[in-house]
Amino acid sequence: MSSAALAGGPVDEKLVIDDELEIITRTAAPEGHPLDEVISGWHYRTEETRALEADSFQNPGMLYVERGEEIWNTVEGDAGKSCASCHGDGEEFLKGIGANYPKWNADANKPFNLELQVDQCREENMQAKPYKFDAADQKALVTYIKHQSIGMPVEIDLSQGEMQEWWKKGEETYYTRTGQLNLACATCHEDYNGNYIRADHLSQGNVNGFPTYRLKQSAMVSLHNRFRGCIRDTRAEFPAAFSDELMALEVYVTWRGTGLSVETPAVRQ
Amino acid sequence: MTKGLKIIFAAASFALAGSAFAETLAPDDVEIVDMEVTASLTGKPGDATIGRETFADRKKGNCLACHVNADLSDQLFHGEVGPPLDGVGDRWTAQELRAIVIDSKEVFGEQTIMPGFYTMNVGINVAEKHKGQTILSAQDVEDVVAYLTTLSE
Image 1: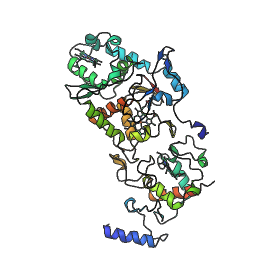
Image 2: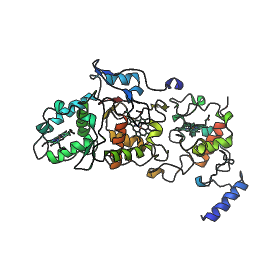
Image 3: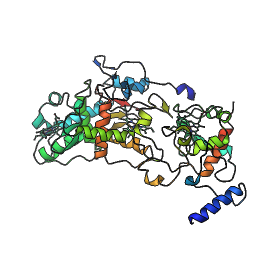
């Protein structure tokens, strides 16, 4: 019955993808982190959902990785170029890059996530239009890029440019209560991770698996879509994707998951 | 209505609690003193049967999101963020329960995750369609409180 569903805390299991790639799903928190240990959202999912992520043939997100590879090699825009025209083999060029985003972009004078970097390459280098937020191809390409870092620990460089200020701004947002329900990210993901809120097992809200495949939606979900969903659930207006506010939040929340392996495409419920 | 008139009406409704002249207390006029709200917000008693529905309704109380409640074991998925509410009517008086539901922060402190269901003390950037609104109406609160008082062990 209902109470049978209650099961506090993360499961004590290890994630090894295809019996060969060990994923760091728990690790000591970086200095200054409010929690002792950072834990991947994988530990809070059901056995079936966890199993899907551990087998890349079963993981529905892998179709988006394949689609992303196609896009990488497809010519688009007035310059007559594909991503591969400049960067060559994606698996080679992209290895490790996704684990270090968001990254300071000096020209734009702000942090760039992969979506913004892709759009910059499309506009300036391919003379193609930037993607609309959450366009299927944007999600597939970013999933492909991120997947080339699978297993590698997340680490962002806060010493570049004004990353510290953006981190600080993101931290403020993380602790600010929003909406009629008056909840902050920290209320759910810091104070109550490991508990069920109705049928949802609350995790620490880490971002190392994004874009993630959500079974509920049968689709890839981008990080800013997830952020906006969580904010909307507090009955608040939510900021635009890639707005300064959400970029700062991405910097801060990515830092909170420092040391966890990239899991993209993670599978969540 | 002018502020003066409102106060007169509020005072009148207090004096005539239970009578046909009773007026519903606006959220900002509710006084929580010593973790209690002594009188009904509407001047009328709550209905425990309706309160049971409001408690479970995801669009209203959605109390099961955070609380186990054996009385509603026919409903799936009780959360575990807050304490089980079995026997809560033995632990708190109706006046205390009213205060908890109206604005739990006045009872448990600012840091609590439990939303205030009849208060304007809310977070920033409230969505347009919820602006200026409380999660529950005054009568909803009374119904839920009436229901909670029936939970005894």
